Image (cartoon, rainbow, N blue to C red; front, side, top):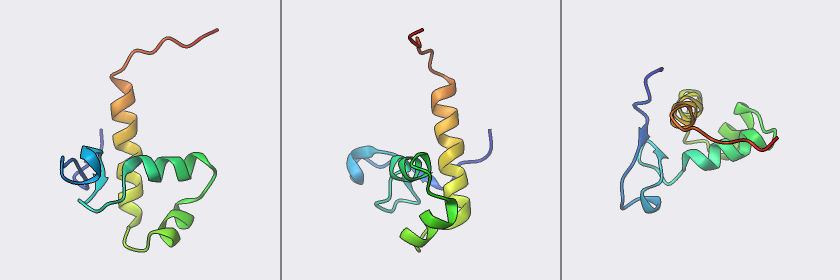
Amino acid sequence: MREVNRITVNPEICLGQPTIRGMRITVSVILKMLAAGRSVEDVLSAYPELEAEDIHQAMSYAAWVVSDQLQMVPT
């Protein structure tokens, strides 16, 4: 897994949800924007305080989180 040193979890920020560098921008907000078809450039325009590496680490973090979970998918 790539390094995710920009992802922070603090119970006093956003109810302990994973955020980017302690800002009030959650990993889930970034992922929802990307899932909705927005580009990395769109996310950076919406949140100019972010850097491209923040977006990449958010995706890496999400991949790591779901890779350790076994989910039953309906067929």
